[in-house]
Structure formats: structure tokens, C-alpha cells
Length: 144
Length: 375
Image (cartoon, rainbow over all chains, first blue to last red; front, side):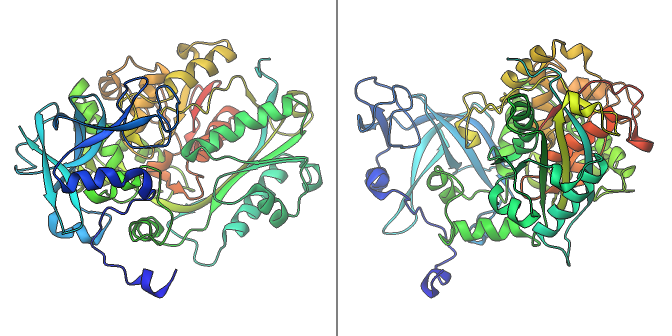
């Protein structure tokens, strides 16, 4: 642990662990486009990005595909006590599993609604891009 | 080759689980329970020729710390199921002739609030991420420890099957009743009511604080040997009739196809088939219980109830040690505490052994010939 690491801002940001693999997603989000990996030979969408297609096991055979941004809420939990103090001002908020119409599931937040009153499993959602800084845009969802 | 009846647990030992052990160390508590289990089995340290422990500390390091030179050694790395997996592995190792007396030992003297410290260090990039999916979770504000993930499962179970908060609370009430009679439990002498559970705060809705484990310091050990050797040792052995798994369907929970179904759906039939019994022959269950929802989903997947009907099962069944179908008779992790170093699941092995051997004292169930353990 270096001195500079210890002083990293508490506000969490996406920090790609494998930037070559995942930066196209974050770059697209900045353009307000939602893209997910799709295997070219077998046509399977998958999420999250990884080295090989989990359907056919071909490596480096997939490309990014733009998707509709339409989704349904698979399940969710209301956060009262976030792990990271950077989220303290946001509570209560919805930490959710979202199922895209293309079939893949991703973690996200449900926004633009009362998270205690208005959220129900299976509700229709659409993508909402949240520009949290000049550098980063998060892919969130709101009621459709 | 079936492992049915090939091996048996012949000794066990544990020290009381506590929030922390201010003056103890991880290697110190592991040595203490190893010594106790070896003595309980009527063996000497020199007899031990196999060693299995949990993840986080390499078994070779543990062997040196304990001053043993085993012929077979392994660290289990299947997270919560490592405890039960150690027994399946020990039985296979013994049946294959790779070792005669296997010491399985789990424990940790953990620093206070280490879950929060580790999680925050991961979030700040000072420790490696928790999983390969961390990049896709962290920006959305995860909850401490595993609370968020099990909140997602519970919410979906309530949606799909109509399971109620009261039904989840019943599990906690029964287990805390059991823990109240267990001197080694962190909640010894402290039962709770349904109102206590329902009035405890949401860590994250719909999950209540009292439905969650408290990470603790603790240590547990058992000795496994062949059925033949077991017969000449002092204790009435607990024979291993069948094992299944460790099966897996996911690393991160939201990657599961069916979020309310657990890998027990494959491991339980494997174990029961090997044992040549059905779920109806089982007298009691000691099932992994980091959260109420996980125990309930796993019990469904083992066939204790039909899928989706575990809520009504709990409503109509006394699952205390006095009851018709006792579950987690030592209080489980929810009642007795979650031993660090993936020792939480090993608690279920020790209590199953205790019950089958007839050595559970006040908590001895009226019928405990066959116990199903899910680590």
C-alpha cells in the first residue's frame, strides 16, 4: 500500500480491472450507448465481459453489440447501510439485478422513482445514463 | 467406487465461539482444537497423517505450525462449503489409502469488523477485488459482506413463492432457541421472539439484521479415519454414509440462472443415493446458514420440502432440538456465530457428529441416527 493509494478518494468510481477488455463498455456509456459482449460464431450475448464466450468457449471471438436498453427487474434489495461511505448520501437506494430484453443480467441501480414505494420485481425498465463525472458514466435503469 | 460406510468421524473438539479472542491467535486456536480432537479420538499427534483445513491459510503452513508431517494435505477453497467438503475429501482420501487419520481443522481469531475493513480496502483498490465481477458491482453501491446478495435472493423467493417475513423469522427463533442451550454459542442463553426478528433493522430490505450471521472468532476440529480403524477407538463413530459435491453454479450470486435454487439440488441427491437412503430417512439436518434464506432454499433443494414450500414447512414444524425435524441444533451460525476462516460451515459438521454420537447433552435430539449436513 503506497501513500498515494491510502489517499484515494472515498467516492467510488468504476475502476476497470482489465482495461483492455472492458474500456469499450465505459467509452460507449460516455456516448450514452449500452453495449454488451456477443459471441460472433455462436451469437450468444453474455454479461459480464470475460476472455472467452461462456457458451461455446471460443476465446477472442466476441465483439460488442449495441442493445435496446429495455429490461425487466429480476430482483433487488434496498440499501440502508452501504459498504462504502461514498454512498452514504444516496441511501436508501435500490441495488438491483436487471434482465435486459436480450437475456443477460447485470447489476445496476433503479433511479427516478421512490425506491421504497414504486419498485416491484418484473417491472419494465429502460436504461438511464448517469454522468457521474467528466470521465465516467454509469448505466442505470428507470421505470419504463 | 462408493464411499458408503468407508470412513467415520471418531473425535471432535471446539472452543466457544466469541465475537473476538483478544489474547488468542489463529494458529493458537487451531492448535488448541487439533489437540482436543486428537485426544477425544483416543489418538496421539504422531498418528495424524492427513491434514485438511480451510481457505486463506495454506495447509502446508498449518502443518508446520502444528508440528505435523502429513502424508496427505489440502486446503479447501469452496468458501462456505469448505467445512463439509473437507469431510467428503477426507473420506475419499482414506478410502483411496492416501492417509489413515485425517485431521480437519478450521478456525480463526479474527480482528473486529474485518469484513468492513476488507470490503473498503477492496473498494479503494488497496486489496484485490472480491471477484472477477467486482467492476460491475462496485459502482452501484454494494452492501457490507454478503448481505446484499442474500437480500436479492430473499426478495426473489418472496416474489416467486410468497414466502413471508414471519416464516423467515421462525427459522431464526428456532435456531436462537437451540443456541440458547449451547454453551459454545455466541448467543448462549439469549433466545429471541418473532417480534425481535421482525423489529430488528433492515441491513438491506427485505433482510433483517437478526437473519444474518455475525462474523466471529472460533475454532473446530474433527478426526476422520477408516470404518475399520474406527471400531477399535473409544468413541462410538459417526459413519459417513454418502457425500455429494462440492457442486457450484456460480461465483457471484447474480450470475446464477435461477437465483433461488442452490447447488444442493445436485449434491444432496448424490449424497443420499450413495447412502442408499431417501430424504425421508433423514432424522435431522445441519445446514449452512449465513442467512435464513440460504438455509431455506438449500432445504428445499435437498427435498425436505417441495420447492417454494419451505415457508409453510417452517410454520408447521418445530425445528428445535426438541422438535419433529431438528435443524441446526447448536444454533447454527445464526445462533452460535460464524467462525472466520470459512469455519462457519464446519460448525455443522461438528454438531452433526455430536448428535449422531449421542453426545449433544441437553440438546440431544430424540432421534439422531442419520444427519444430513450441508456445509
